[in-house]
Length: 69
Image (cartoon, rainbow, N blue to C red; front, side, top):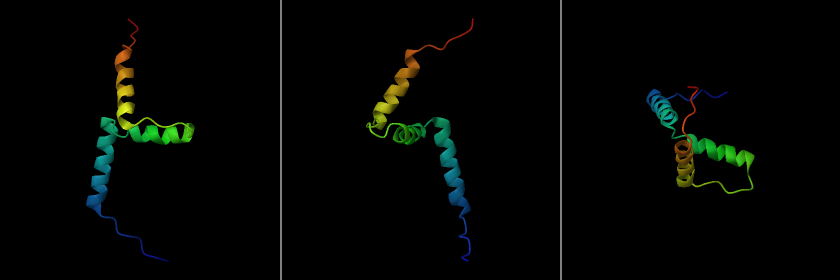
């Protein structure tokens, strides 16, 4: 049985902070898109990152938010 590798707390803190910032800012959206695209549509080419962000922004700007009043 091998001893567990000690975890560097600074490295773990940096990893957690980076993950948090990417989630809050939407930086991980393209990574999630690639994972989903590879799983759901493996035969078609995925959008490159620039086209992905353009499509995402155009989708948000094209439809005004719906309100009940």
